[in-house]
Image 1 (tube, rainbow, N blue to C red):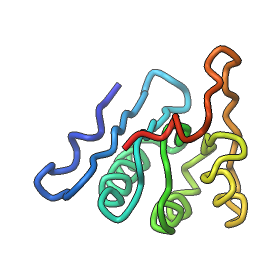
Image 2: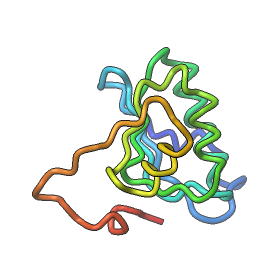
Image 3: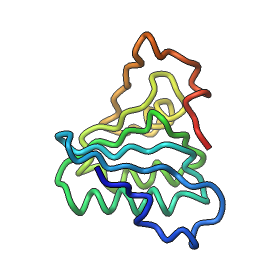
Image 4: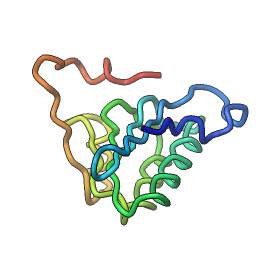
Length: 126
């Protein structure tokens, strides 16, 4: 497991920081994003996706713990869609709706285990 948060110079990012982890033990490898993807964190998200795309021909991006604010995050996903086999998003959540409206080809609703069902806003950190 690689903590991709370290790939970005912390001094170059103003405001909140995303928690980004690349789980290489899974096949295909999974990039897990937790936090708010907005103007302040878009560079971190883009760097992590480019890093994983350069290392792996196929990957999954798990956005179940993330929140998209703006179009920049969707643009990053579209730029790397050839390598992304699935984007996991909370069913019915804002990310799933935005990607569905944008026609993103590999959106997969992520199941929420019964014992951990909580309102979507409780899953959003940051």
